[in-house]
Length: 232
Image 1 (cartoon, rainbow, N blue to C red):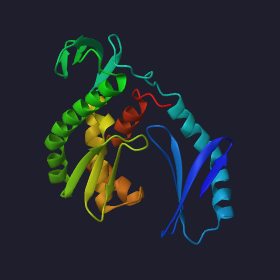
Image 2 (image 1 turned 45 degrees about the horizontal axis):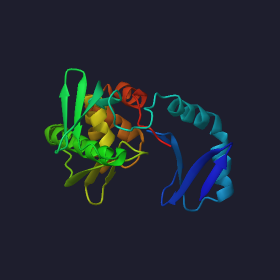
Image 3 (image 1 turned 60 degrees about the vertical axis):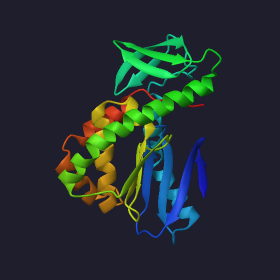
């Protein structure tokens, strides 16, 4: 089921739950509603309409966030790595490489390479940076929380910073986290580990977040306030 209220699309998913849950998700402000299977479509729409002022404010916050222009991966563009801004300098050679030096990101590519090919290379470069950091940070939070995931994977996502499957104990982490300040990755790792134990954002979940990372709200705000990728 999908609703559109004042040009804002809202995805509705009926689940085997007791209460309704409303989310406006980063990084682009996607609105979703989880509702009990027994609830009628009319009751769901009434609920959403009572929350519409709040929804509009939250969506507006995402729309106002700074966003990079569409990338062509040419000299002069900016590149963010772990929260730091670099200015791209494109050079030509037979082997692709990306080197950070001072405030420059020196990208070496074939002269005939397309913007899409450069994007694919840079995305895989980000994946390598993110994986190296996950290998370092994840065991730390598994030890602190005594919660362990059996498997993890990186994935380019446009609606979530991370996600998990409690049944398989698997976590996915958004490739874009390699662009954000390091504490943002730690926050998302902790967030998803706790979801292995508690799937809802309820009082228990919040209590566990408070226990292990008292400053998580400030870090969440920092993450959602940083520059986002270009989106059509």
